[in-house]
Length: 189
Image: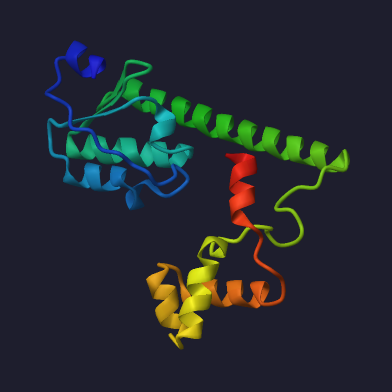
């Protein structure tokens, strides 16, 4: 907001793009925004990595904006991508930096996971089923509905779960007792 005021841009309209920057920019809100922008419009992002993490895509976004006469501002660096050679060079450099940074993050994550694995720490979801299931708190209701002869699909609908969730719960809980959720809530609450 401050950037827009300082640069004397019109009142900003905020667009939230919740899809990962790993997704092609054309398939995100960013693509829709650029397609709908016209000559003289300005698009402001906080930093290049909010556009994409791929150098080629940074260049594509810059080219698309330049062709439409849209000025793309990167607030953190105070950079404006327009039709100048300087902005084209900066787009390439910043795109490379964003891509390299993402590669470093990925590499560090893989190294940390490999280290934990070599230390004997099990990665991923623990083996075995959960002790408390989503439908355990509805056990009395489910048993009552079944006793009344209500079909399982209808029961699932009343509990706002998929029939498969109910079938799985029945398969597991008919083989073992339902834990006392009251005492579990007391211990954790």
